[in-house]
Length: 248
Image (cartoon, rainbow, N blue to C red; front, side, top):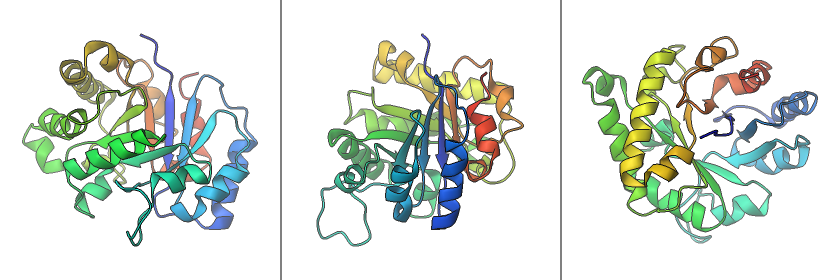
């Protein structure tokens, strides 16, 4: 099955109003491939700005986080309804920094994912193992556990993109080899086939995210189960365009 190439840019807690505008102006100035779906996720303060400044038809805007309930007395949270209200259409859930620093549980992440989907957002669902878990050879078990929390309460995955992000490779400059990443992606898809069905598993895009940059992105080109990238630091730089074009 041909799955559309997808590149996500997670700005994390980086950038000012001026810098975010410069990043989007650079994207606007480029001739981006029409066959590549791109989502950028600026800090929540700049989601509205990003939506207004973006002129690229293949680029969409998303949030980095979302709450699992409607608007209410939840100080500091960002709701699906608010994200949609400013024109964004995607959100991340389950990023390793939310799991490890904020201590979000698999179940809470699943609830946030379901609420976002039920209220019209599309979701980039992040999964991945720590260095200790990788050394213990439990990568796929960890990924399966994180996926299963979602599949227990979400049956329709057409608006979910899975991002496999080995925690040990995020922001470290380290990256899994293309062969290692492909092996893990293949295992993830095989597990999804057992839980959400083969047809949905084949249609679900699985991204790699772990110190991807303009130089190493083309190395993943011929890997059957790697359907794109979720990019961190490199999404703040001009090389983000090189990553978007890495399948050409």
